[in-house]
Image (cartoon, rainbow, N blue to C red; front, side, top):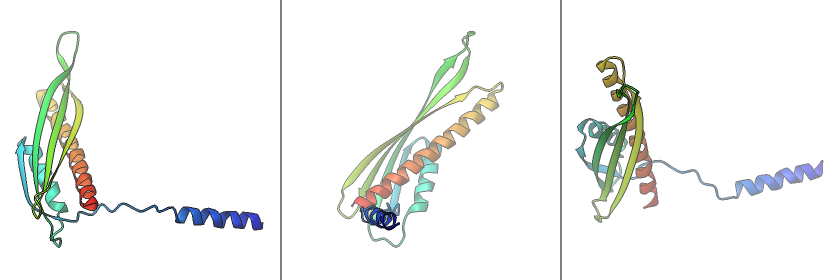
Amino acid sequence: MKIKFLYTIVITLILFSCGYKIVDNKINFRINEIVTTGDKKISYHLKNKLSLISSEEEDRLMRINIITNKTKSIKERNVKNQITKHNIQIISKVELINLSNMKSKKFTFTKNGDFNVGSRHSDTLNNEKKLVDLLTIDISEQIIEALANYSNDS
């Protein structure tokens, strides 16, 4: 009985003193300006997501430049040589510039996805729109995570 009790105390002391620290995903700067170029719809969504996370009480000012490219390609064709699947790739190049010391950090985020061609053209357009929205949300989450890591490192 004493051995089990001593064993549990030793294990808990080892686990609690291992130095594990929870990562804080708080943005420690204020976004002064967001400049976007490239695909307008994707850039608009990214700009809106990033403007929501800016911390107004921070003194450090940052400028974010985002260059977004969307490429659409044919992925599959059937026996009749009709297109059955498309592939969309979204590439966002993000440059974070610290306005106080003019240091910059560059990130590149890439997301791919496929969508099926519908029986009607409107179905195909809806499938494409849904995929672009999902890929944009994924990229915005990746950008926010990278900005949080950058703000905590510096």
